Length: 239
Image 1 (cartoon, rainbow, N blue to C red):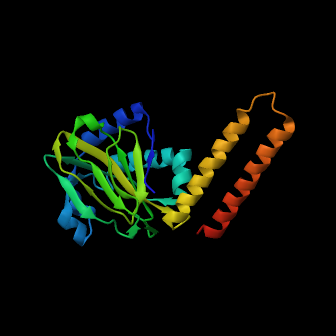
Image 2 (spheres, rainbow, N blue to C red):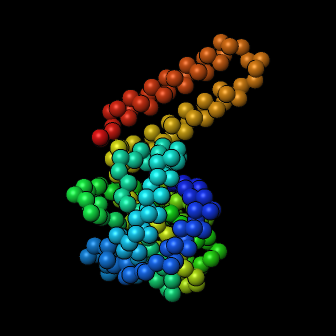
Image 3 (cartoon, rainbow, N blue to C red):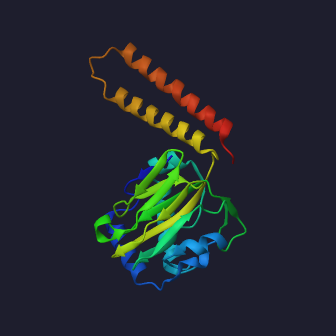
């Protein structure tokens, strides 16, 4: 499942964080690449321990934990501290798959990378190229989002970033270990969650003239589906 998470950051946050990121000292992006990825990777990156990266990364993590669509789609157990990269002057990242296990910097904890995320800090018209191209069982999709929006996709996917031929592409990227390991199961749970939310909205929007028995019938269906959702979580979650 590939899904756009809109408005992770507000316009004000994007402006503030972007100014701080652009003023920071960047290094060769291959510092965090594995042996194979390093052959395909050509970009700049903010060092993991840079104070700006840590502060803005913490703000992103906090925003995601409050974002209902992200929580519904990812069912996050652990969010890797966000990293930051920049592409310009023809830089790109060839086709690769993300490492299965990542150690959290400065900690003994490692995470399994179930989901990959890219959060955009530059609008599409500010640069040419730079599309994130994700290949999976659902086909090939090109992603280039408004600043403040994020894309979430399975870390098992082959993906690449096309060359940036004008301007600069500035993003945050990171990984999530989900409570539910399998993408197909997360997709089912997400669809069920969205259906329950829509049903509850429909119930709230019912005209006052609708008999109470009809409202109760709809509410009973919602309760049943919610029970199914939580029982599936109970079966599939890894804590």
